[in-house]
Image 1 (cartoon, rainbow, N blue to C red):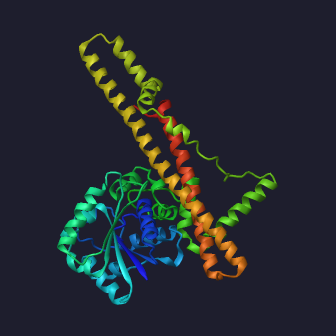
Image 2 (image 1 turned 45 degrees about the horizontal axis):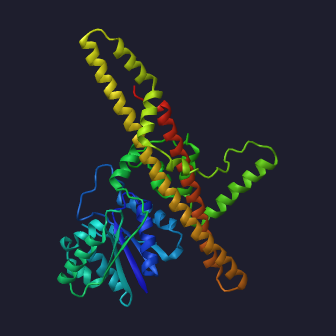
Image 3 (image 1 turned 120 degrees about the vertical axis):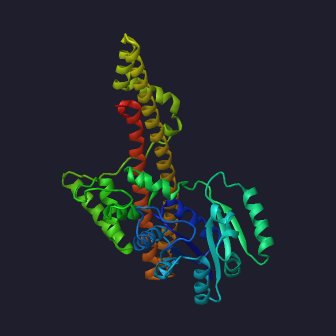
Length: 402
């Protein structure tokens, strides 16, 4: 059996982690993936305001379920339970004792791979597991991988090393994501249940009133309370409520949303839109008019500084809205791709069930995975539509310069 081991602080686990993990699973044809949150990472201190080890463990479990692979993905608490720093060599030694006949592969990103020889007991690690490194951005070029592979083979001749680039992966650090969450954004970069868990536990600077949630907040919060296998039933109940409300003329609060028109995103000219936003800002236009009519140098100097600050604020607002829009688009496209794969798997499972060649438990696991993919796709669609609306508002004068 080929087993992948993916460790990290997961503070919090996000779609970038999941995309990379899914790519490695498919490429290496792993039979099982073990997600292992670190208790005390040896290479860096956890920043103030971080989730506890137990909270990161629970979020990682939720994120692992979003991969839609059922029992093939498991989250372990072995490093959370272990006292002291979480050294990978200790974890692999424990896993090798548990799986002596199986082939272990240690998953890691580019930064970790390029500094592997500086880890605690790297030779021991290389003897216990193969190294599967993935590039998470377009800047992760093969020459970097090649040079490091050659170096590691010289240092550890018996090492097994595999590298791959994951195209289209969401490129965001956990640090940046925590900052986004504190500012009220970033939900499109997280599995829905993980985002809901963060909201209801007020992690990373989030502070919402759980009694007054928006629809986009309510759904992930609700999902975060559910066991994975309960999600299909709950969503089925929701759809039946919508059907009955439509049939009997009741007010349907949850409606199907039209697919985002991505051609509008492709046609965006940020520089031109910044100019439009300036023209649409009443405060900015007023300042320019006052500057034109100013009579004294002191007033002109003060108004010039105000104009400069307003212009910078509006420009940054449009640029920020555009960056968020691109991230939301990436999340939406990945969710759609994942859903398409799950639809194929679901059709195959239906055929196997009809033919009697699949167990009921395996079928229900696939059904739950398919439903989770539907939830993620729907959530990412809502996030993209919201990001498109936010960008439109920024351009049309609602980027505040006051």
